[in-house]
Amino acid sequence: MKSQQFQIDQKETRDSYMISLGGELDLSVVPQLRTALEPVMDRTDLNLVLNLRELKYIDSTGIGIIVSILKYRDGINAPFSVTEIPPSIQRLFDLTGISGYLSEGTEK
Amino acid sequence: MIRLQIPSHADYIDIVRVCLYGIASKLSFSYEDIEDMKVAVSEACTNAVLHGRPAEEGFSLIDISFQPTEAGITIIVKNDGPPFEHHDSETDEISPPLQGIEISELPVGGLGLYLMEALMDEVTVQSNENGTEVILTKYVSQ
Image (spheres, each protein chain N blue to C red):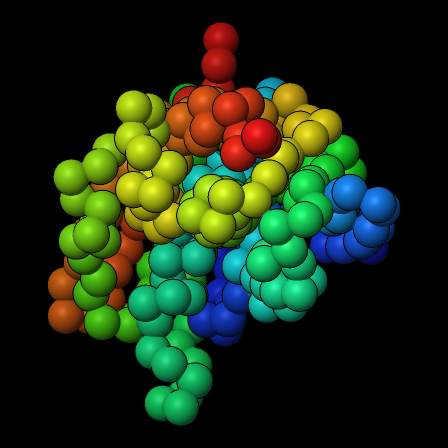
């Protein structure tokens, strides 16, 4: 099960900050994810990108966090996007309806 | 019937998923159905952890039972914490799928029960003074 463990990688470039998630995102890793997000949430100069390519599992807890990032970034007029969504996760985004908001995103 | 008991803490929810995966695989559920059940069962456990007895009062326990049937499987997630409302009062008026809502108005919580209902064939939630029981049923696709 080691391969399923939650992972966060962060990479800052000139105009974007990419957070790549891997493994399983559930209630147990919420504090870890919030800590990683905290320093960049207010960076209006950067496009905050959440890359989900290696994410194997998400549920309403993770979806709630993505919605809260979306709302916060929209509120401060800062760009946010979610990229490389695996099909099984896309399905949950479609079921809950958040995909509609992610494709629009807050890209300016 | 197969029974599993975990402390009411987020760190153990993945164990329930591993266990479910093993049992559902033997029952010849498809990969997609197993993924759906993993989310639904985790949602029930997440609710139990969030609404169970707090750590200061000694963690409560969550009982999970897996009952294979002729047509599929019934999973019961039971916790002994106080009963909880099935819907967050704030999100009562907003029901998924979310569409046509301003971003600032989007609900951050309250999607758990909706997902359980969308991913399982039958969902029953029973709350009383002894705790809450979530009964999830999935049939093997023909």
